[in-house]
Image (cartoon, rainbow, N blue to C red; front, top):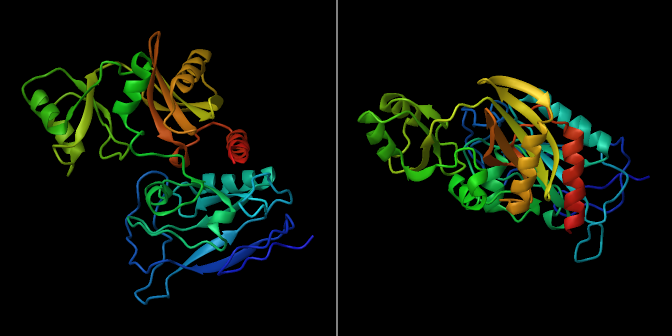
Length: 340
C-alpha cells in the first residue's frame, strides 16, 4: 500500500499509508522568535526549543509517526475521509510519558505527530497538511493557551477559559463541591483577613491559570510568599479548611467515566489505577449535571466519609497518573470520530 504523500504547502493525499512508514520533516515556523530558556509550567519544558534571529530560519522539527492503515469515518465538506491525528508536545518534561503516548497511539492505529513549542509565546507550529482536512487533538500544556485563541483546529483542545473557573463549576455543581462553602473574593482581601488573625483558609485562584498554588494558608506571610507577583486584585476562592484524606482523577468522555486513578493520599503522591465506587459515582453525577467540556478530567477528594468535587481540569494538559493511556486515548478517539 502506498505511503501517504505529505505536501509541505498543501494537504496530504488521502491514500492510507503503510503502518511501518516513518517520516521526518523540518517545517518553517509561522514566526521567528527568540526562545526563552525557562521551563513552562505543567508537564512541559523548553530545553529543546530552537530559534533564530533570521526570518525564515527558525524551524520546528515534526516527526510523522507510523500512520494507521484504517481511515476513520469523519468526512470533510469535500466528502473525503477526515482522519484524526494527535499532535503531541515534543518538549514535555515527562519524557517517559511522551514515549508511552507514542507507543500506545501506535498500537491503537492512531496517527500522531510531534511538535516542539516555544515557551512563553503564542507561536503555533506550521502543519504539513491542511488542518481543515483533519480532526486534530493536541496533548501538552503549552498547546492550551495558544490553540484555543489562535487556531481553528477541530477539536484542537477541550477547553473554554470562561467555563474552567472554580466559580462556574461551583454554580453548576453546588453541593457536589468539596469546598462547598467557598466564596469569591480577592487575594488582597484574604491577605487582610489572615493578617488580623483569621482562621486558616483554603485559598485558590478562580481561573485555571495556576497563578499560585491552591492550598490551606494559616497566615498572611505564607500566602503572600506563594502569591509572589500575583496582583492583589486577582479573583480567588476562599473556603474553610477541610482535611483531605485522598484524591482521585476521573477521565470523562461524553458523560461517561472511562478510567480513573488515585494520585494523592495523606498529602503524599499515591498512584493506583481506579477510584473507589463512591468517587466514580460522584464523577458520574457531576458529568450528568454539567460539564465544562465534552472531554475533561474531574478530580474528587475525600475527607472522612465526605466525598466532593475538587475541580475539572483540561484533558489536553492533565496528567494520567496511573490511569491506562490506551483506555483513555481510545475513548477520546472514538468520541471525536462520532462527533463529526
